Image 1 (cartoon, rainbow, N blue to C red):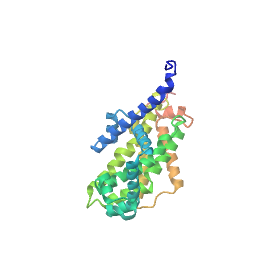
Image 2 (cartoon, one colour; image 1 turned 180 degrees about the vertical axis):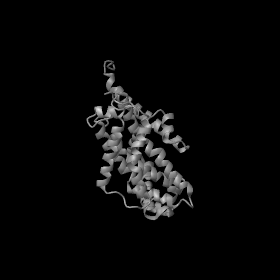
Image 3 (tube, rainbow, N blue to C red; image 1 turned 120 degrees about the horizontal axis):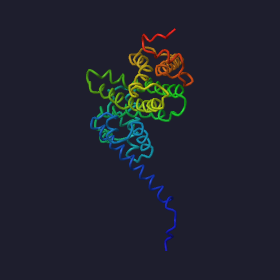
Image 4 (tube, one colour; image 1 turned 180 degrees about the horizontal axis):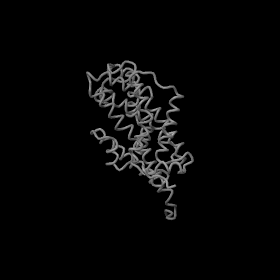
Length: 288
């Protein structure tokens, strides 16, 4: 006779874990389908009822347990990145297949076209670089959190691989104008929202707790990131010598300080008399 008193928790815990993984996989698949249909990642995630950071984390977790088909796909992507960076967009599918040690038809079956393969390479580069950002501790003091997050962002935005792939797309603009749009869309609609949503969620909590002044969290996150990387990335993208690591660090600390002070956040997290005086309406002179 079966022992009816056997603990149910031990049996249900694995079931709950499997169910959670299944739900995550379903939502990732849903987001992927909608992105493939032309939606930006933010809208696709909203329709699938999943946050942008969660989508990237779940997708990366699934990639960690890939089967044979996914391993072949990853081999092709890795080889394609190497060949594109070496030979530019003029690289043939044959050379990529040879580097991946697969048949040309396998490359075609997996990606359909060279343009789609290039887009997938760009996407994979961003995803690998974004992963560490989502483990930044958001429970600590705001200056430290913004500094660490900003440092990660600079590594993503100024990474030689992402800049090189963008230059390749820019060089092909005359013959393949859609390629530049693809690269821009992947960066602007996939990579950047993942970061801005992550920071915006943190800022939203700080605003609700009264730690900083209220504002649009998403626009605030975009403004912070733009102040950090816009100038440095533009210089590098046109081949002008970039800033030294020391100057980038100085830029980072200055942008963090300006951003924090703009939201009424003092160095110790407290609102100071000087901050409050600075926020008085123009013309509100102090009575003598």
